[in-house]
Image 1 (tube, rainbow, N blue to C red):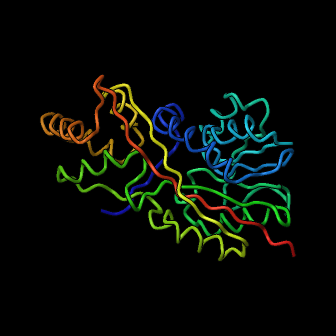
Image 2 (cartoon, helix red, strand yellow):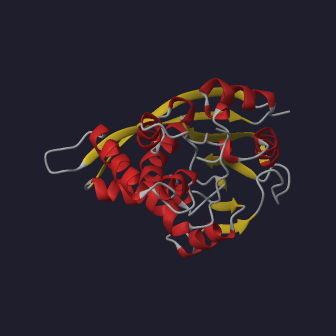
Length: 264
């Protein structure tokens, strides 16, 4: 099946689906990035503001800007904990509204693969980074089905459903990220994986989080007959690792990269 289109215009559903996972990855990524204190930051594809919130807590930045193409996400970020300290605005990652060399750190969380022209976005990230500044990001390991939605997607395939591909799955590979950054003339590229494990209270908690209305897989599930949907849910539940109290815990993996803008 061809790749499905994702629309991130339901900030509440997105937060319920991805928020807990994003908050688990961000501190690990920021510790690895190791940016100096009092740096100026740009968060590209800021979503509901989770990376911005985390770096405010951990990195003592001098300033933070965040951009996202979805007005609903920017509105949610502006109303969130980082709203009073971060300048959030609607903007396209392929045409950032900032002058050359504006930021010490330009970072992108869980976004690069979803951008229609990732090479153009990374080139823009490099452009707005100061000479020698950090340009970095991370995406879920979609090619290995190790994203938070991986267990559901794999169970659907076992059930015989043709599951649509995630946009930019090939871009999410470690080697693809490295090539993307190096082709943008970024230097000293380093890559790593970040594994995080989280628990859901029970299957209902998992199912509600994993089936936001905007997701293509949710639309497929909703179109099933009631009996088929019930059998799919039982199949998904049977494949998940359940604790003695009914909790469900599993791990997801993000592929991360960091590099430097050229000094000359």
